[in-house]
Amino acid sequence: MELFLWGLGALLAAIGLAELLRWLLFWVWRPVRPTELWLVVAPQNGEECETLLRAAVERVEWLNWKGPCSVLCVNREEDPHVEAVCKILERRYPTLRLCKKEERVYDIGREC
Image (cartoon, rainbow, N blue to C red; front, side):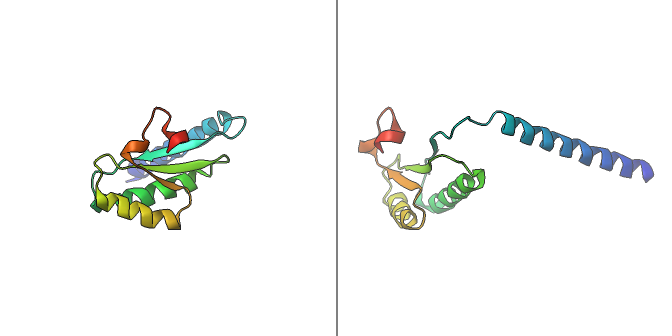
């Protein structure tokens, strides 16, 4: 039993050390000045759209990005349910934007 507890303690220490190293590397390699961040979400249908968009907005808020950041919802199939959900959530989350088929260009961040 004692060997099991020592092994568990060593495993948790290794996981903690890996997490500390990850945090340190992200801190060292952070951008010198804030840059623009776009998180692109392309839901398949209206049923999963709300879950994906809320998760994406929460992820952007969790990142605590210093520069401008937005979530871009790409409606690939022109599904009216996806468009309706995006329009409702756009009112609640100002960082969310809907990108329609005719608005897609090479630099989607600037034109959508």
